View 1 (cartoon, rainbow, N blue to C red):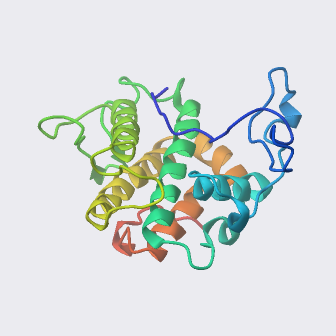
View 2: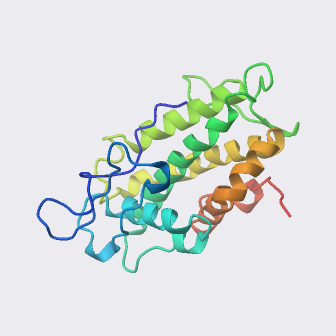
View 3: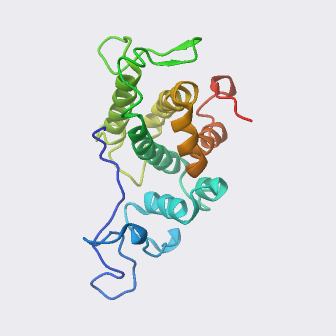
Length: 226
């Protein structure tokens, strides 16, 4: 639904690379059956020399068990915190793009003309020259598109292996807006929310990541689950 450019990193398409050094290749062959997708061997962070090592490490953890939140969120020893937060936020943005596919038949300008979470919270869209109201689905798409553009910006994030300290100021505002997608889904599309959350624990992982890293205050957490 959105034009995200934040997918899996990969180099080629086999079990090992062409140099026969037993490095797993991270791509699905054409014609691979659904049950066999993403079945390449996980690579330890220490042995991964790719520029995408952090992204690949996080995605490996998710493929192994996406509901093991602590494993997915545990940063390798000695890792740069700014890079870790950046790559986690990229991954959440990617997964939210998958999540909102569930909205295609239930969330539109007629069913949800405003971006709300209960009648107490109305969110204005900042993806315009002037902040304005948008339908919920437009707000969500605008938010994911603008987040993807920002995270791919050569100006703010020119390198994946080194994040400028000045660029980390964007993390809080990104997380605040991404959280609103969960909030709208929970309060206005509970069935779709429950279906996805029961399989992925994406919201629970996102909140734990944000609280752990000080990217959302507890007062902003408006989803109350048992």
